[in-house]
Length: 317
Image 1: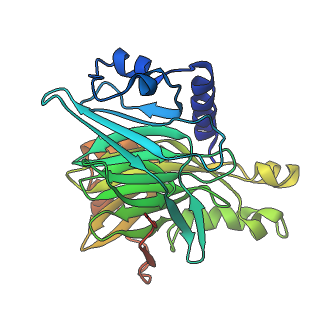
Image 2: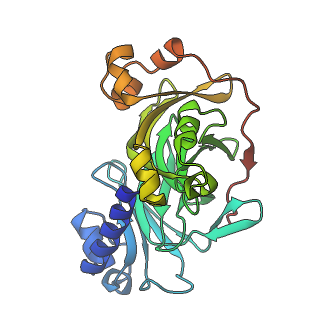
């Protein structure tokens, strides 16, 4: 888990604890009609909830029981479109997602965020000791699938960038909504700068044996029309003793990905070289303004076998 994400999780948990909201208070604050709800529903407290921002339609995901609670009960979802005044209610009774071929995690966890993108509703959940999930619902509020990891952004209508948690918190996949497939994209098979950093660690250090510290820095930048996204990762040997930290300086690396010929390909670059090569200061500016520049200028890494795709990432009921 990155430091920024840990702060986000703590903030959401504290906010839900301090705000002992009822369903009625939340709906009224967003001017949602309440005639479909009973007095009991309206007066009941909700927990582990999140609502959409000021964007339309209004979305709310919540539990009607106090968390932690085992089982947590169904996840309630509300969608209200002010333009048509149509209100829909749905429930997700159970959901789990695969971390690996033989390991699954429960996904009915406290809700961090909910949103809608190109006719798809996505709900991010996270537990204190469990990797989070992305629940994917139709606008009719039917569960389509559940994906292990935290959604970082959408690349067009069909692809979601997902950061997996657990033992390796900075592993990034792309989820193909149409084919229901996950493709591992980071860390790439051929990664010269990452390998250079690992090679600089003192011989015999735990960093070389177990993997050094990695942290996603800032947000993932997305250019939907170009099918390009990018981000910065910081490598740090400080977690593996003073000797390693004193000999190896932290290293930040920018990665840019594009969908090309049905495959995700990447380029890697030191952030301090962005201005000299492309006239842009950040990877976000590069992805937004010159999405293909890195692929036209930088040499592609050596050819490797395609990353393995993991079909059927979720196990919806």
